[in-house]
Image (tube, rainbow, N blue to C red; front, side, top):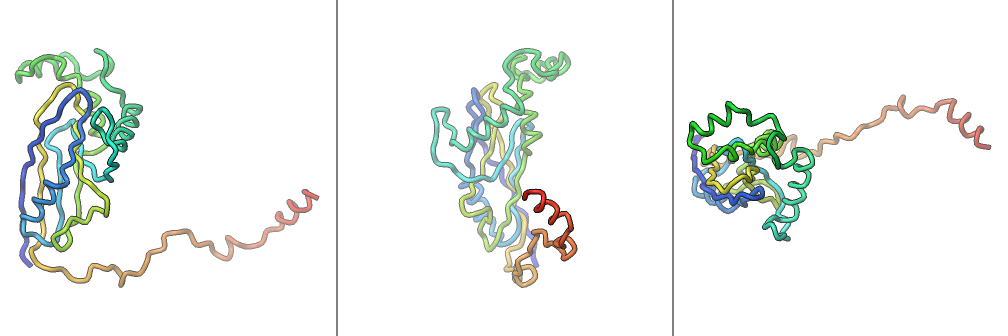
Length: 208
């Protein structure tokens, strides 16, 4: 069975001011279809330490911040966990050495390092998603979209997403595990666990 790897980079423009959610579903689908790979995986990875990737439903309604309602709900939760960087000294990072490093690499000002909230959210949320590719189609769920999240809202920036498609150009065997038998993970009580206990009668008698 032949194995093939295809890699592409998607370039994006984040707006700053508030975190940006980019719907990159169409681009990822196009890369997967053009790869010629029928069965395998598609890995979508942020190139940046203040960004994340998520697979989630599109909630359709969009607010005045240009965020889908579900995206803004998520942002509200993240802000409770990790508040926006609003004033100097709010977080330990960035310290004086890191600020100097920013100047060394020609950052436009110390303010660009005041993105600690973005770094921490990326750590909590993760920077990548892997999606199964079946018969040339992404198997992410009926209503799933792929979003690239730029948590760093200090300024508008160009961003990059790395997409790797890996797998075979051939068909695969039957995918059903154990002939498709449903795995029941619910707790099944034993007869001992369901046994009569004398205290049942005592409790009932105490109520009379």
